[in-house]
Image 1 (cartoon, rainbow, N blue to C red):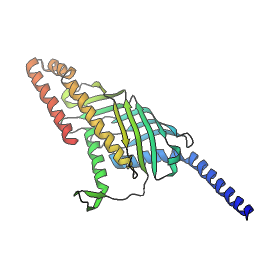
Image 2 (image 1 turned 30 degrees about the vertical axis):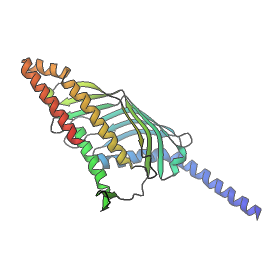
Image 3 (image 1 turned 120 degrees about the vertical axis):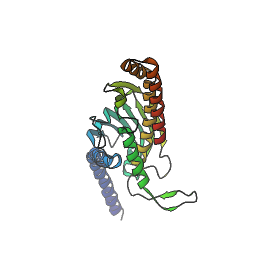
Image 4 (image 1 turned 90 degrees about the vertical axis):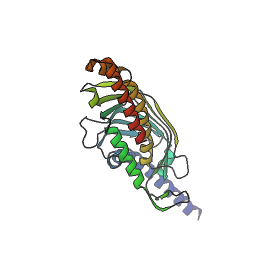
Length: 262
C-alpha cells in the first residue's frame, strides 16, 4: 500500500515537472502569439513584436521591438514604438485563471500623434478599444441599471504597477502646415488594476492605459501649441496677434476634443 502511494506521488511530481518544463518552453511563444493576435482585434490596427523573454521560474521578463501600427486612413508608420519593456510576473499565477503582474515598465517609447482636431490616430485607437470593451458587456441590467459583464473563460490579469516614462510624442498635425515637432510625454503611472478576485481582462487594461495616454497627450500637445507651437504659427502667418488668437483657439479646440473622448 505504502509502495503504491509512493509511486503515485512520484508520478504526480514527475507530471508537475513535465508541466513546468512545457510551460517554460511554450510561455514566450504563447505571450507573443497572444499580443500579435489578440491586440489587433482590440485596437483594430496591426501589432508587431520581435521577441518575448519571460522566465517561468523567476517571473522576470522583457518584450522587445513592439510596434503598434495605425488604423486605416492614417499615413505615419506607427502609433507607438518601443525598444524594450520589462515586467515582473508572479510565477505561481501563470497556471492560474488570473495572472498577477507585479510591474510593467516601459522606457523611452515613441508615440506619434497624427491628424487634425477632428480626427487623430490615437483617438481612433481609443474609440476602437472602448467599442471592444463595450462589446464584452451584455445580459440583463443590474440594480444600478448597468449591464452585467459576461463571463469569460480567458485569462484575467492583475497589474500592480504600470509605468511609462521618458516617452516622446512626434506630432504630425495638419495645423502645423507640414512641419514636425516632438514633445515629451509626462510620466504615466497606474496602480492596482484588477485587484479584485475576478481581475480584469487584457482589453480593460488597454482601455485604462489608452485613457491615461490620451489625457497626458492632451497636456503635452496643448502646452506645445500655447508655447512653442504658437510661436511657430506666429512666424508662419506673419501676423502675431491674429496668429496668437488662432493658436489659443486651436489649443482650446484640441482640449475639448480630448475631453469628449474620455
